[in-house]
Image (tube, rainbow, N blue to C red):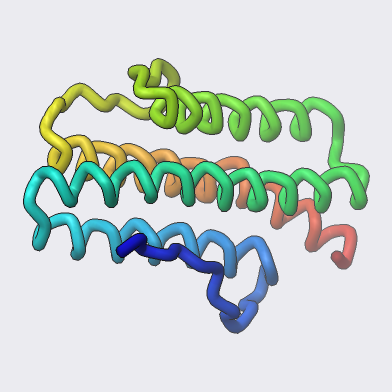
Length: 149
C-alpha cells in the first residue's frame, strides 16, 4: 500500500501561507521519522523513496510561493537572487537523491542502510530548513511587513 503525503489545510499564522507550508514540511518529516522506526529496511527504503518524491514536489511548490511573494512585492534584487539560489541548491540535492546519487550541497547522506539514510535526510533537511527560515525567510518577512503585505 502506497503512503500518500498530502497537503493539509492549516490555520495561517502571522506570515500566512509560507508559515503553513513550513509547518507542513516539518510535520511530514516528523511523520516519516515516527514511521521509519517501525519498518524493516525494505519497507523503510520504499517509504524513503516516496518521501523524497513528495518532499521534492512540495518543496518546489513552496519555493514558487516564496519567490512569487518576493517578485510581487518587488523584493530587492540581491536578496531575491540569494534566496532563489538557496532554494535551487536544496532542490538540486533532492533531485540527486531521487536519481540515486549523493547530494553535494546541503544534505550529507552517507549511510547505505535505508533507515539511516532516512534519518540523515530528515536531520539534514530540518537543519537546512531551520537555518533558511531563521535567516532568509526572516529577512523576507521583515521586508513584507514594511510593505504592509
